[in-house]
Amino acid sequence: MKYFAQILIRPDAETHERYNDGSWFYSRFKELFLKNHSKIIEETFSAPDILLKLNAAFNDVGITNLVRITHDDTDFYLDKEQITNDLNEVIQEFSIVLRNAYERFFEEISVIMEIKEDQIEYLIELVLLRVHPVGEYPVKINFSGIPQKHRVSNVEEKFKLFVAKAEQSVHKYLELNDITVSITKKEDFSSFQQRIEIIDTLHSPAKVLGKPKCSFFPLYGVTLGETTIAELEQIGVKAKDFDSDKKLYKYYTVKDMRFWYSNQITDHIYMTYTDPLPKQWQNCGFDWSLSYNEWITLFEKLDFFISIIKQPAKEWYNGTRTLSAEFIATKKISVKISISFELDFNYSKKTSVDSKSTLYSLRVRAS
Image 1 (cartoon, rainbow, N blue to C red):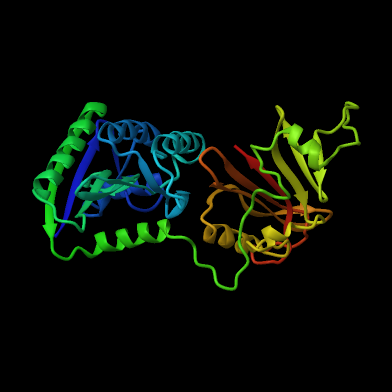
Image 2: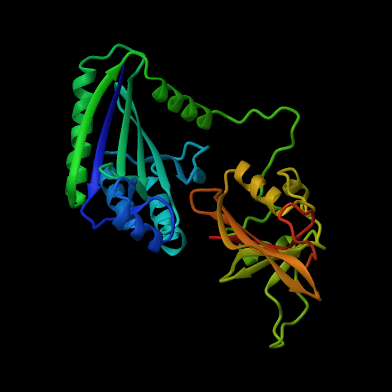
């Protein structure tokens, strides 16, 4: 027997209605003259604030293990290493990113968590919807529970008690217009089973047959955001050239790769299409000849979170048109370190997002 519960939440925030297509003027026209057209509600509550408050609520009931965060089906975080108690740190980081860049552009955010108690294993999914039909709840918390294989007792009561504690904790941290709780039990709950299979896959060692291992760091013994200058001195050669202020550039060269540093820590790499890509990055699919669309597809397959900084456009360069675009691909590679690949497309004199060899530079940062 599997158990399922859902908490539906309507935050205490103003909302506004609009018709589901067209400009503001056209929407206003339909409001006045086309009474039966469908409307949607757009959220006005702050998604980062909701996430932080719900994070506190989850911590109160012992939900601290994060499995995945997706932003419109793009992974921001994916726990393949079974890191424990990672929910709070990652939610804090994601809230900052969301507040700075993406809050107005998301359609759906999903946060998947898990907790194992003595007799029941829980999978919890938080869903935030920016746009939703009239009357639908924009915040949903789905609970899936399955008894452990050994003999258990009073499972249903324990499941209901856990959900009730979660509801009380949500009330504690959020001001709510409306909250609804429903609990069901089913012999065959396919969506729950699919989720369990996803978790099992994430927690199983990767099986790679005949394929080189894909890893980004350490690179030549250096890890951005971790390797110190003292460590660089042991394996690299310090810069001998000067900047415009006649000061030595702040980098060390290790196997033809320049590792830049600040505050005594290696923090970024910068390279252009004339520089060779490291072999271990090539094993991940990196190739200067990839088109803009192929780079996007590659980072999506590698579970990076993609942010479009500059939409692809045709701009003038040396008397001819060229593709100009920029995006950032971010991924957490350890508990403390995230890496971001900043890709700048320019100067190729090619204009299509499917054209080969349009990437000019690649900057990698640690945070």
